[in-house]
Image (cartoon, rainbow, N blue to C red; front, side, top):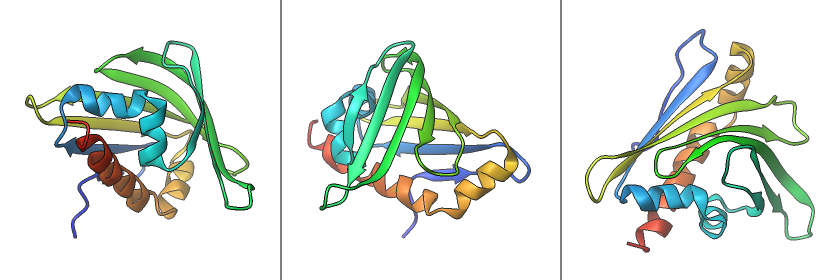
Amino acid sequence: MERKTKLNAEEGKHDILVTREFDLPLELLFKAYEDPEIVEQWMGTKVLKLENKQHGGWQYETKDPQGNVVFRANGTIHEFVPNQKIIRTFQMENTPYPVQLEFLEFEKLTDDTSKLSMQIVYRSVADRNEMLKLPFAYGINMAHDLLQKIVGKLK
C-alpha cells in the first residue's frame, strides 16, 4: 500500500522534505499539532510540556508498562503562527542524534482538505542519513494516518 506521507531526501543535502495532504479542514490539522490532548492520541506519547508561543518549549515522553522511559524528546518553539506555521527544534534525549530544526507549514487546499509541509534540517548530511536508516518514513506515515483517523472524528 502506498504511503500518503511523502518524503523527499535528495542525495548530498542536509534536509528531508515531508508532505502530506489530509482530509481535514486547515484549522483541525493545525489543532492536531497545537492541542496537547490530541497530540498525545496520534503520537502515542505523553505531552509533558507544550508552550505554543515564540520562545516556548515542548517535551514529550513515552514509558513502557513498567514505567521506564523509552523515549523522550524536547525542543524550543521559535515561531508559532496559528493555522500557518510552526518553527521548532527537535531533539531525542539519550540518543546519538543531534538536534534538528523543523519548519512546519500548514496550507488550506479546500474547505475540507489541507496540506502539511515539513522541512527537517540536520547539522550534516551524515546526520540526516543516519536518521533515514531508522524506520522514520514508516513511523511518520503511521502517525499521520492516526492523526487523520482521530482528528477526522472531530469534523
